[in-house]
Image (cartoon, rainbow, N blue to C red; front, side, top):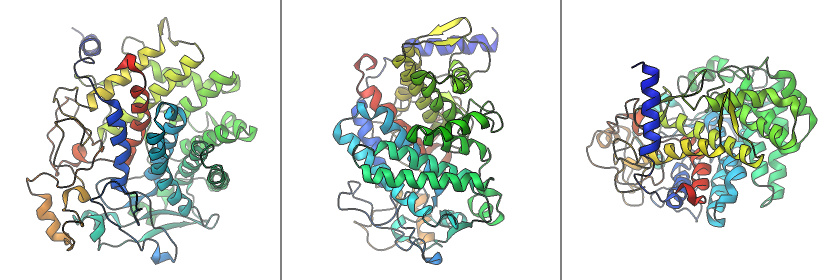
Length: 493
């Protein structure tokens, strides 16, 4: 049997047999996916903090530059604030609220907007000194990674890294533009004053990004600080399209329409269109802009929709052309340092596009094949159920969901005893004894979706295996919207 035939057969069998194996409580998973963000908070925690084992941390961030950079999120299991992936996290939280907030209960939507605002309040600080400079990150990655300390005890350097106006920062500023513009839509009804602040700053941030074209990691000092963790490998042009697309959606201004029309090919909207994540925004750009073609028949933007359609067709292995990859157990798989970040982001686009198809009473056309919107949704549901435990390992990759989930995750705050129980600080070297301990993490980082299994559906786990057991904010953010949808659509339950 040819390999392609084998994988198509396996995939079809997986879709037909596995999805009904375990019933899932999507409401519980949604609540927990939002709660996770409280465990990632940096700064002074509010009285309403529900993740009670966390405490205040990094209260002097920005001091080396005489500015206030307190707040925001730690990106993963360490204690550095990387602004590039933090902005992408905010964009996806906002998109979740915009397109899927109607499926959330008022309580869940309220908590999701609180999680979003914690990010955008901080992102406003990162662009508060435009056009003179933009702030890139806080904390030095290597010294931070050399220690295993909970955030409340940090004694590693909290250096804030700026980029002055003479240096380009299009990738970072473009993503912050997208985050603030998207958030302005999310807050438009509940907090119109804040929405206007976000949109005004998004417009100015985009002007900054477009007038100083280039990747922020091209700067040697920033490159040394950010890389190899969050280098802008894909360049900056996709972020300019991404920022413009969100500004077009937030404002309806024709300037952004013309910008998208004039720069589509030059900025590579046809390149790497099967990708979407914190570095490569091309897949998201095409899907986001396709909405305007569906709803407003904006034919001048049809090439974006055409490319988005090619991406959607790639999820179906019976179509011709390039295809997505799946594990034998049915998980969307792309090689990377953290597998489920790809699964989450790509699944979000699938679900979003299915929504656009449904609302316009259309099908997905893939050559001679036609697919109903629910065909896309079934693939997404398979991914969600896999993450929640319907997988060959019979393990939930969302911490705190279900009976079986990893107990030794790669996360400093979760693994070191809480400051509320053990107020005496754990030092850098003392922390490594905890790191190597076989004991479960004492603090459950509820709702965290970790890196996940390998290409063969195998999961070894353990704190030392960061690629499998480290959570990130940008894995969880897309899942918020996805879980909201399936919570409220019983025919998929």
